[in-house]
Image (tube, rainbow, N blue to C red):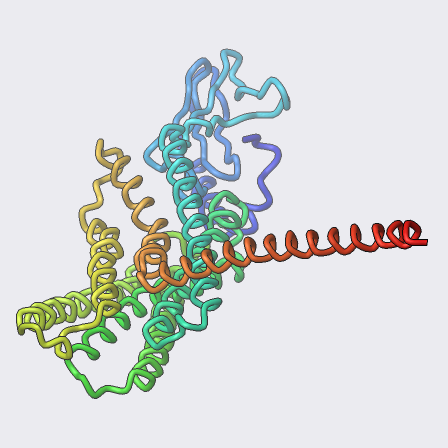
Length: 415
């Protein structure tokens, strides 16, 4: 960075920080004793205060903590040449401070690879979820209260995945967006976490639905679905609103809210409560199912095949959806050998959740598979039937043509 040309973006957005640092630097210069001998004069380069440095030596300072992507534990350098002047960059010819060491290139490469995993996983999951929504909407015979819940679950995951893709495309790679901290990127953060909370609320709704049908035989499915729909969209809204209010009140609103905040405990409580209740519901569901299966050959007391399939899918999804939250308390410290594995596993479990949901509740659903088979067989039979009809019509036309052309010849022979 040059001393003569300042970065207007950072000055505008970090005016308070920079003014404080400039004032502190001037006070430091005034209070410092002048160096004897040939040396470089103290200077403030708009980021860092560089003290007077002896000729032929190198001054060091911690990297600025307010610059996105800089590691404050690393050191920036500034060279004082043999003739007692600060080093000038050979290309620009201006006084230059070396901040290139402030970025951990190995860590940056890891972050980029992890971000690529997130984007690939969210994109694949989004396609799977949209396909699932199309399938359940297309076949009228699949429209039932249970699949209505599935479609709402798919919708919440689809919105969540789409918003994460926007986040990784519009915010993460653009340092300028993060530093400017525009209102739209803060709103994107809030809406994104709302749909994230909705995803777990809808997973709880799946568990409540299964539990109610098995335990209470006289419950109206339509009424139950309406109640679950209202709760699964509204409860996350109130929790997200509370999280937003607390974060705004705390003043922790810098850098598009990327940094972790204690206010996030509100959302963590919602997710943890959802998973705990789901776990308790599913344990009781398994107990009830096992009891009914052991009851004997009475088919009326046995749960339906579709209900058992939904139970199996929910049981499989619970650990999958909770894995990234179960791993969070065990996050290894920075630069730990296991940090790489943790980041990769977290990226895989978080981004491919939508694919798992679509696979277990739609692609592996027996009713969906049966409908797809019928549709395929009907299409094949229809194609063959059309082909047979066309062939029959062609033969008929050909015979009529032969007869019509042969008739005049016969008349001529008679005459």
